[in-house]
Image (cartoon, rainbow over all chains, first blue to last red):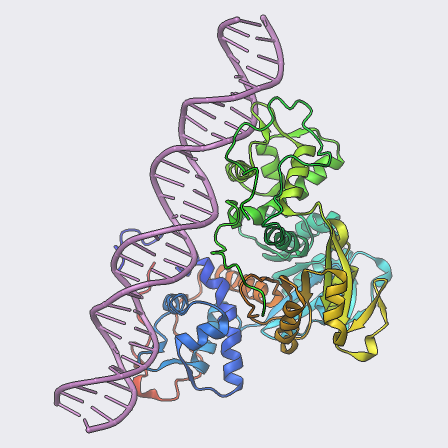
Length: 255
Length: 255
DNA sequence: CCATCTTTGTGCACGCGTTCACAAAGACAT
DNA sequence: ATGTCTTTGTGAACGCGTGCACAAAGATGG
């Protein structure tokens, strides 16, 4: 198959592309639904439709895991559920700590989908001393001062940050120092972490802004977003030249 | 489904790559912080560091917007803030409706970052009649029965779905029917929408599973990365093609 | 046992996104 | 004005991800 020259390409993730990893949970969810309906096997076409992806993409994704299908039949649902679960590391228990028990943190603690697959809310941590001891989702909130010990005692390797943006980096640093190597960040901040620590961010504001962009584009198909503006854009202090390039945006958008 | 008159490849949004659009909010956030500190200009290098991206990538991203920089100096912060805001459509008001006022929906309604940039929570909608009238974040919750009217009256074009997964598709359909063309989906479901409607999903469970994958990989760098398993995986119902106990997994694993 | 039919697994081509590296452009000092 | 120095803007190469299209594999029926 491969040339076999370099057995160690720059990709460290055991040959499974990141894009594929990101879709595995999607497949798993669809497969779990099928499993609950006691569907024995499923074709790539059916499963792809359920997961909202292309069937060829799905087959290629599965091919990275191995040959788990049967030609002419499809994939065995139970078997595939197990294989993907194992590949994603969901066959083991993942204690998770949530730091910042405000509205969002409390909501996540109560979120059912959290504990659904191997993930378990092991600790809730907040900087407000008044919150210490208060039960949220059946778990007593603990104070930030004990963060280090809490992480260690519970063997937490995944941390969720739901603090205000100003505190996020500091919390992140402390989590990492305590041994956390994966962080899910809900605070609208760019976190800097040492090598070997994974950070994924969930940013409501960014998602909305992306939607707004497309929304504007949809709505403004005859109302051009003009570079020059009837309002008063904060002009460059020294606007040496207005707009040099001509092709950047048409003066009139074709309707 | 009256929408979808113009079907666009969706690949090209006025020449600005999707990946660039997704980063513009990041730049905007960093620029806003600089603006509040009254920093007049910033170089691509500095801004890139603040946004957590590569400087070359940032310059290329900005080049899609036009030539807003000054060689030898950098970018004018205020001017760039305005340009990106305008490009993202944040110079106008975006009324948003949140459907499903549970823990998460309420948290989002209270979320400060929501109203920060042009977005305004115009309506909260829930299917529970008992919630109707209850104020959440200073806004009275309205019943799903009035969804259509609420969307129309407020001119809502962006909807946020925070319902249980079972209700998400139905809510989505109703939102679209009422005129919503952009949806931010927090429910762990694959939504199917007609052409011309944008859907972005925020899925806590998926993010955690991706983290777990990498976490497992990190932890098991000396553990057996082999597909075979000492446990008892749920076996295929028809063992006809059960790969022998000797060579069940291809011993050859790429890389 | 052979023919046929279904569905997987994958080689290949293409397009998007990222990164490098550098020439052009402008600021600033002399 | 001229030279130098800084930083942008971008051409080009590269790598990753996606989708097509088809051969191989196995089930199924005669």
